[in-house]
Structure formats: structure tokens, C-alpha cells
Image (cartoon, helix red, strand yellow):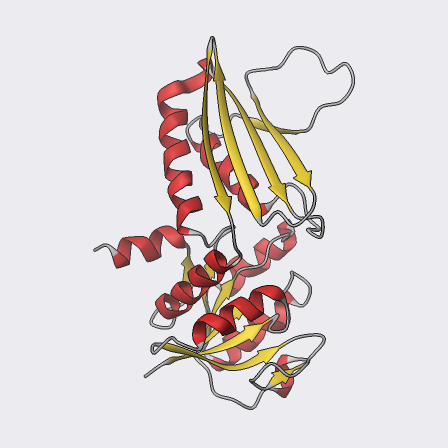
Length: 254
């Protein structure tokens, strides 16, 4: 039986990408959508979860952190898993997610791209090999409509690098004025916003007389939609708990 998906943020760009992919997917289908600005997109779309009439297995949430508790509560009440594909969560939001994971299967990752998750593994290995003799700088680039900075993916990459240093590094967002000599404890973070850039992330390890750069560039939002659908299929069979891309990949490659 196909995995039945409630698509939150259904009328946005990412919602459109997910719907396009589901049209030809024999293993999953869109049951309905939820969006603050409902319009005709080929499936029922509601303004709030309280209006939903359709049965479903999983929620894919490409909306925003606003209204997070409503979505989590709906998932808990109906026994659904939820893929949190939005970014910009506050510390309070993350605490709420952790609390609900005791009774809801939650898939949360800063980036649903397979390439970014491979990049994550590569930069961790590089940080462990290169150590403190190389300075680390992260540059992320996104379109001019993105509201949060740094991106969730950039923060995820910084956390991954920091794991290699027992979390002793600190993030420095941009630099301005007389900031003094760069400290070894820094991970530099730089956000670029402009045009229609889908998403680019670059991690630079700068040492004496050489620079090593590991980067990823998304050329289409479809890569994130593909990841979200894979996550929804994976989550539909899972018990309550927190899941991320490494769990999905481990299962797919077992």
C-alpha cells in the first residue's frame, strides 16, 4: 500500500516539487495538503490541521517553525510520523521537538540532500585528520528570499566539524572592523544572499601554504523533495523517536 502523505506548505515551491515527484511514485501519494494560503493544486488543501478529513501515514512539513506545536500535536493524536524539512528553529522549538519524539516518530535534518550528508561525513574526516593546524571557514549562499542566516545546513556542518574538536570551537559570524588576529578556537561563518541561488555550502580548511575546500551546490530544489519523500517512506514504519539521514542511509545500505 502507498504511503499516504499530508504535505504541509503544500502551495509553496517545495510543496510543488514534492507533488510533482509523487505523481509518478507507486510507493507514496499525497493524501492532502495544509497551507496558510490554500489554492487549487490537484489535492485537497486546508488552512489548518483541524480541517483535515483524509487518512494519512506521515506528514512532510516544508512550511516554517510557526505553528510547529499544532503539527506535532496532530501527529501525536493520529499516530503519524512527521518529516521536519523546515529550518530556522529556535532552541525552544528544538526542545519541543525532543519532547514530542517520546511519542512521535520524527525525522529531522538540516538538509535532505544525499550530497550534503556525504559532505558532512567528508568534512568530519578532514577535521579529524587536519586538526588545529588548519583554520576552518564556512561560506553558505542562498537566494534573496531566505529569512534565516546562517542556514540550518551551515550550522549542521559547523556542529559536525566541532565534534572532531570535542565541541571546543565557537562560531564567529562574519567579521567587521578591527577584530584582531584569528583565534584557533574559531569556525568562521559567512552568509551570502542573492538572486535565485538554490543552496551552496563550502567548507574551507586553510593551512600553511595550502587550502582544502569541500563544497556542495544544489542546482534544483528537487533534490530536497526527493530526500523528503525517501524520509517519509522510511518514517512510516518507525516507532516514536528521533531519526535523521544517517539512520535512513544505514537502513537502505544494510
